[in-house]
Length: 372
Ligand SMILES: Nc1ncnc2c1ncn2[C@@H]1O[C@H](COP(=O)(O)OP(=O)(O)O)[C@@H](O)[C@H]1O
Ligand SMILES: N[C@@H](CCC(=O)OP(=O)(O)O)C(=O)O
Image (tube, rainbow, N blue to C red; front, side, top):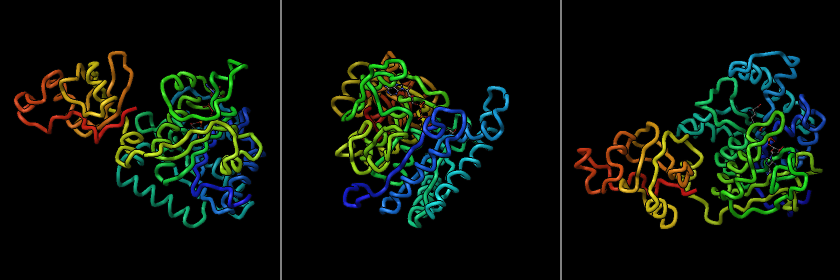
């Protein structure tokens, strides 16, 4: 690989279950060797690689010879606990062919949202990279329950890219990229090669369909791409079976769907709001407030709030929605849900009178808000 062709310094590669199993029910080790070779090639050329690998549950099923288990969280945890050790063993052996060491990081949402744990994970990631070791990341499925899960490895890989300050995120899957319709259902679907903006019409194309063992389909890949590109990270969705796909993407050859990074990325505080805590609740806005927030860059005032959904505390992240549930923005609330309920629809001047105290005019200040 010609070093002068490479425009990137640190790359996160996410491999979906669909790629690792090649559509079968077991890990396709022959193909994993090929992917390890490509990543090793990058490392040798001076590009740091972080691998976000799925496949623990598939590997667990394979290792236990496809046991009949009840469809419960405990069964998934069992399969992930068995499969993750098989998965890391496989990667460790494959990278050792190229004299490369790997280090395992199993994360949950809590590791990314608690500031201290976030910094610990970041330090560990940097320590591995600075010593030429490939960090291998997966969700800690064996202990994570829905409440503390990121939920899918597309979103996890975007957060990993933010965490290690990568400049490229490559999402490899079983399709050539994002199509204008699900290619499984529409053989005439066309590949979208370049995306400048992720909006509702694009999200509609992603649908909800997934391959046999995958989680989330294109919808979660678009969520991941949105988070990463807003943080200034380029994203490519491509086929994990395309010849030399990783090298081609890194050398900026036309392959898959490329998402341009925002020229002016969100500041790190807003990146954290976007990628960080799960929204604890929602506030429904009237039309004027939606315009003020989305088009005029204003803070959300109590007057524009119609309704409160869920229970949240001051400082929690909430979603700003319309009457149909469409989410327009995500932000940190300066008031808890009980207070917002009391001041909804009222003028900011009356907040102190109603509550007996006042944390300022804005319920969600524009500095604490990301418009989607
Ligand atoms: N617009 C689209 N373009 C491409 N694939 C799509 C689209 N909409 C849905 N899909 C589905 O998403 C699947 C890939 O997601 P998923 O099964 O979660 O894979 P992975 O294991 O790689 O994360 C594809 O097999 C495809 O059927
Ligand atoms: N953490 C899970 C994979 C979750 C996931 O997002 O899967 P995929 O959609 O195949 O990338 C596992 O290792 O089996």
